[in-house]
Length: 184
Image (tube, rainbow, N blue to C red; front, side, top):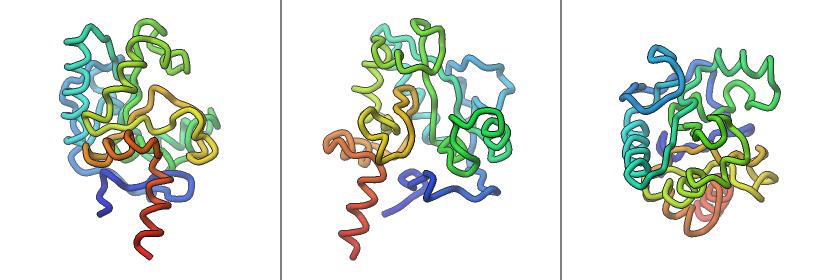
């Protein structure tokens, strides 16, 4: 069953310009941005699962910091105008309130591929599915997701789906392709 949590958001399945998630909250996750910054917002369940994930990481000596959560359509449009590397407006999972970019001090809180080689990046890749998150744009799946590898970008999809995707090695696009075949 497709829910907001499992919804496919990409270049072929964009969100409408007026889409704003219900229940956007700032629950005090360790963000690098100011307390009033909208990037601190996440959909409520995703925010609580992110807090569980980051708390567990901290208990294991792993220092994860949030860089960016929610981005409105208008904000994404502004970013895209200045940097075509980012997703076009409507095509960013950040607009859903379910996506979160993370980094760590070892890479100066930057969103870079080198994050994947840090203890934080390795830990995140292994543990994110336990909390309902997937690494949305993994290596060697660029031709399927149509986005470059981003080891810092996680997306809440539910524990059931994240576990399934982790076990099968699939990304959301592959899951939806199979789901469509089954539905036929």
